[in-house]
Length: 168
Picture 1 (tube, rainbow, N blue to C red):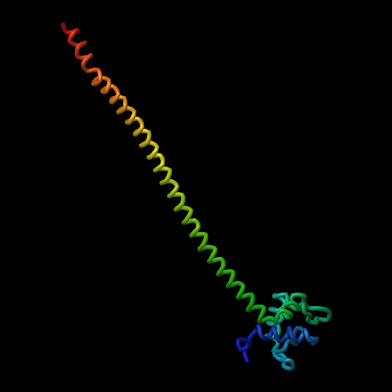
Picture 2 (cartoon, helix red, strand yellow; picture 1 turned 60 degrees about the horizontal axis):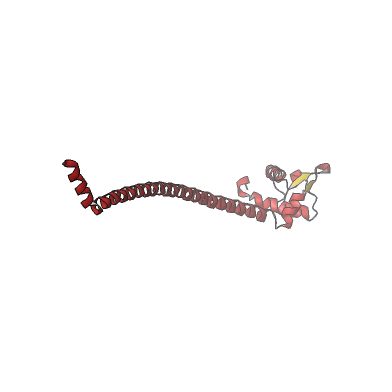
């Protein structure tokens, strides 16, 4: 069997359980089952992976020992479950990140719309203020004109007589 024929995670799981059960295992003695040893190159690759993942350490006389993290992984269901949970957590984080990204984009879009709307409101308010001011001035002018015309019409007879006196 070639290296590709082995499931590395299953081999790690098997050897972690054997170590947890008190088996005395050295670097070239990793196993694919309780009684079957792995070939040297596969054993080295598995040990390297276990060391890199901080699951084991090499103790006195090159004896492989579980680390606190390795023990924790076993207590939480084993290496395969740990990896599956980590992958699911990563997927969940990616999903949450995408949701946050979408909501942030939507929030920015809504803020832009709100700013545009506020700007149009300010423009309309300014227009209303100018129209109101113009309307007040126009009403005041027409009122003044109406007042003057009213005085002239009310006193037309006196004004006419005064004009006749002036022309004689």
